[in-house]
Length: 186
Image (cartoon, rainbow, N blue to C red; front, top):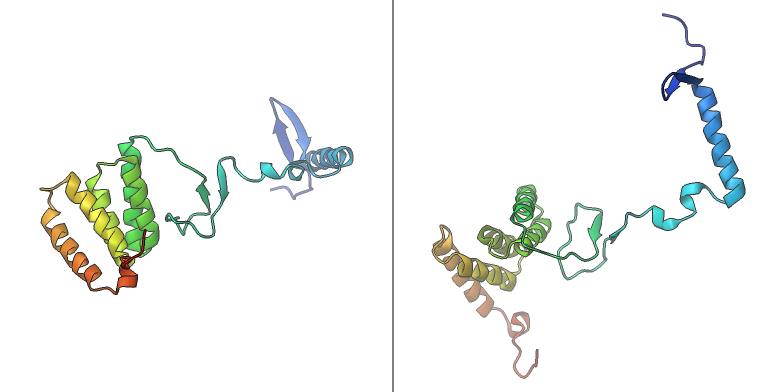
């Protein structure tokens, strides 16, 4: 094997060869020329080029669930019937549940119900995740949606008993926690 002498051949196109050093110098010259003409490096002149279109930074406080493992969240999403996307969201939600990230899982289950409003399993899992997050009213709402879709489904009797327990636990909460204060207009 011959010793390295700093000359590395780079093929450009069909048969044209230049050294690595010459390629680097050519690139550096082009960047230096653009800095002289434009006043700033090429990619830093426009700040919007750094952020992908349609995405924004994660909101600080959002009423909806945002995946805690993802860097960006879409601004607004329009939903049409898409059972394939709903199934994919459900699979990711199941992964988050196994991981122990119930907030992220609830967000994925909620997305699945938006893609397919008749997806009973997504409502069931959304109810379970919200129950684990300590949100009994939202869990009860998800269970009610499941029972409206599949009143005789495999999990219907189990969900009815869970819903009854949740109703009893909500009824035992103080008035301020139940959000049913007398004389208060919602």
